[in-house]
Image 1: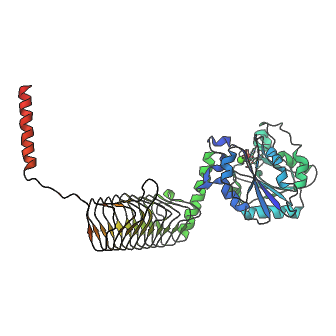
Image 2 (image 1 turned 90 degrees about the vertical axis):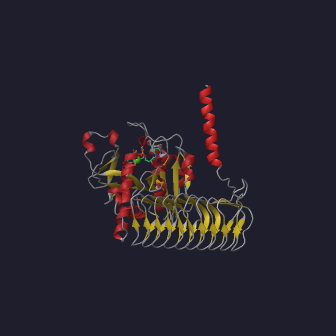
Image 3 (image 1 turned 30 degrees about the vertical axis):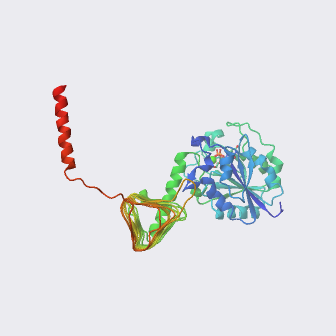
Length: 468
Ligand code: UD1
Ligand code: CA
């Protein structure tokens, strides 16, 4: 590794016992993504620093969410934060600087890391502790300072006496280290404490005996919040959601019942759009001006054009033009493209469907691997039979075509422009433009048959009753 490189070491090996959940703590989703990923976004924005994660509990699961550029070191068993850093020592030996952060602090910003690094460099310290003074110091480690303001040691809340617990300055678990100095003391940490773990915080006391341990106090304690329980995670999620909705409303998005709207930070909603109760927008979704989402709509990775409306529906990986109506109760699966004025609703499922302007599929249909021309009408219960158990095939429906109710279009097949398919037909051959295709058996009518049958049956019943 080049001497110039710095290293972020993210501690993410713990189980998260206080979560009381089978999922590894750092994999719990926050705004739709594992909480660890939010932190990695920030550390990976430093071009002169490498990011390495210490993993252990559910190492495979955690590794699966790590971006390719992030290294990993396994810690097994997990014997404390000091042990985690010791296990990873080869990843930072020779580095210019080391920043350690807990994987359970998802809100820390790149700016805060930058200020910590800058302060650390200016103070020429062996270590710099990022501290905070939250309203509730609760379970955080307490930072004990020397009279000159440098850090003397950190006492874990579980090991602290009542007097120490009164200290308001807490350890955020985020530090900058001189790697060489840390390596000199990391093997000397003991585990004579309430938890019987190797505490990284003990390295601070060992370093302060050898030189300067500086501290930087953040003015935003919320940003460095560590998540230890599902209730804390939900509180943080709530705060982020409130912030995201607030920002949209400030920018001219109507959200009449904000608490019921769920947003991922990656979505874009333009001024003049409305998000009604139960709207859930995820991934790279864009909602353009005048569009109305909800009540009750889940939209992911989709583009919703101006003045379009989606209600009581699920829309995934789709692109909708302007003035499109989706719902109630439609499911648009990936690669659905709806041109301006198209309509899909009432128990219709689409997949890889290109539906041109003004075309409609409004009732109980499946249309997949299909192109539907402008103004075509897809009757109730139409099914594109796109799959033969081995391969998928396309269906083409020309502009202005009319597909009668309950038709099955067995792909690959083309229905020409302006053609009509009779209700209940099973279409296996191409239908030329402007023609009628029917596969129904001709209807027979027997006048009086039903009445004669009724009479015969009631006579028979009468005879049986007498006889029995
Ligand atoms: C730690 C600090 C505490 C600080 C708090 C800030 C110690 C001893 N205490 O306490 O002073 O106020 O963070 O949030 O460091 N981990 C491993 N391997 C292990 C143990 C933990 O990788 O063997 C990881 C965990 O997955 C977690 C992080 O280290 O992401 C912090 O561990 P956690 O148990 O949450 O420490 P706290 O008790 O919160
Ligand atoms: Ca923690």
